[in-house]
Length: 203
Image (cartoon, rainbow, N blue to C red; front, top):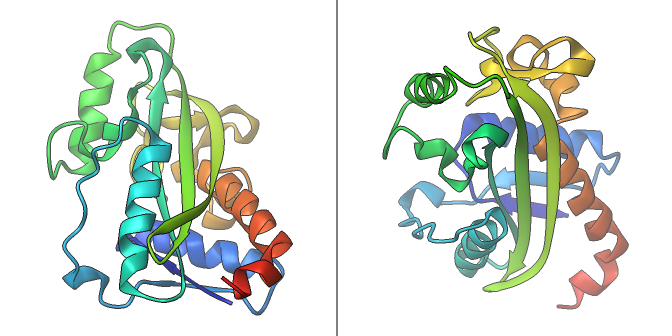
């Protein structure tokens, strides 16, 4: 079974490929949607992760006949009323770099003692413009005052995960995937997918 991912983010694609490998089904592959870079992306106008993941999956699934998955993910910080949330990738402005987003987050939290945060990921699966399923995954942690580590992407160098006693940027991709928000959402997605594999073949 092949699923097409609606992302050109190398970090996400690496996690998708790792998820397919780890799920124990050799017949499952996840690849980037063919021609994705030439498709004009939709406007992410949703106010929730579910809305954005669903609109992306429905939109991109019109460009192929296979199942398509899209994700929307981000960081929710308790002291910032769950910001940056759906604006995580553009927290410091459109096209902002990872460093700019991280710097802005640290400035906003400079006087805050409550550093609790969670990563959230929602994955939507669609075919021919119709959303068939969504799944949500979480990972709870806290925001450090200085970045640590060079692995991962996004806010990983600032996100401290207590059970590992380090940030997500200080662990391997395999170890991160075992607990990550995206890993949890993917595992829930695969559980649904394999439970409904026969009916999906007839749609």
